[in-house]
Length: 128
Image (tube, rainbow, N blue to C red; front, top):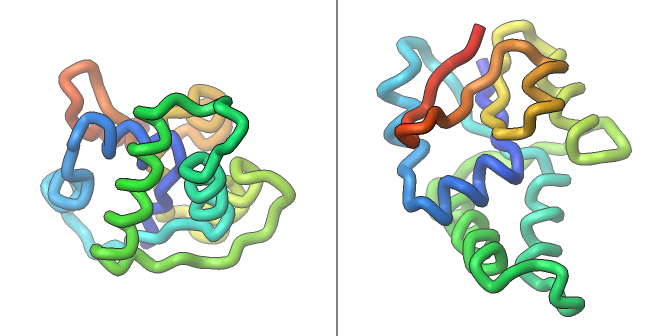
């Protein structure tokens, strides 16, 4: 089973200093592999390097921290099919019915159904 990390999930957990790796191990009772689509890494990099001031300083810092955490935790970056970040995540999710996406995106949550998200207490929960 793959746990797929989305951009907004990574930025939020970086901003809020939430250890999603530990939280995931507490939440899931089976083996899994954490993965991040290459398009997510590219999106984080472009947010971090934004020169047009479209991104707040906090978001730039969070994107930078998210990238550092991906690297230091050796989370596997994988190539995906799809024109957009969301499309690539959805396609990857559908490769195996056990795959789960970590996202805060409402539209993606509606499309996928079962996702991992953060509740009001900043704890990870698995929806059904």
